[in-house]
Amino acid sequence: MTALPAPASDPDAERLRSFLARLSECETTGARDQVLDEVITEVTELLTRRPGFQRHWLLKLDRINKRFALP
View 1 (tube, rainbow, N blue to C red):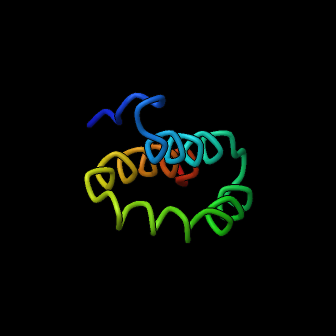
View 2 (spheres, rainbow, N blue to C red):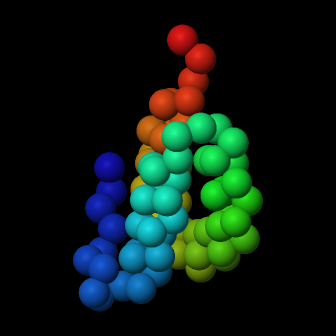
């Protein structure tokens, strides 16, 4: 996975990390969907502004979503 820049050097990377951390803490699909609803506009703007972060976001989001997949 592509690493994001160090937090102190890049506030966008730190913001994306915080969104992913919030999503990782979700225990249910409902909680995950609520967090996504809250952050999606800012995430979309961030990824549009910083397309290099898209791979990182998608890989982490895929990992989070796999926890909620049906067996």
